[in-house]
Length: 180
Image 1 (cartoon, rainbow, N blue to C red):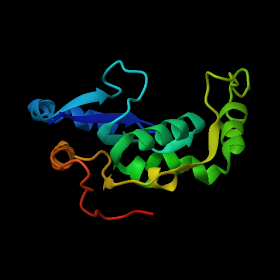
Image 2: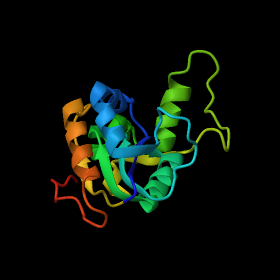
Image 3: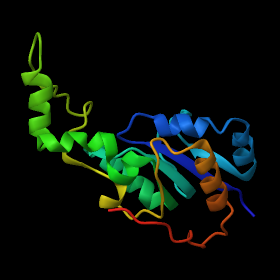
């Protein structure tokens, strides 16, 4: 039997969920014994791999790069977990939605509140364009499990990961509360 493969991804959020992930401390050794970590912001892997069993996705979808990444993760992952309140509801990242669309957000941040040289940054290929609305993961792709919290506790993260990594291949996760 091959070892399970798990990953973590960071979209539009503060990285607090990943800090809580690391707070599992010595319990991380249990995870390493149960599966291989194949992609994460805490390691140097640029391309999201094929054939991932479980992925924790932190953060909301705020720009075109996030959306492209999320779609690739969904296509290559068996069980996708919305990891933390920004991924589950949009949370803090979605506060900008009250200003209007992307243009209104950029005008406010870079023109109206500028002190020295008001200018909207534009570096195609370097600065990803904002989406008009920040949205939780399930607004764009199917999500298999929701792990709320700001951030979720290390205990909750550990319990969910162990449960999902122990599922036999092809077995869907138990129904979880839905959001949105």
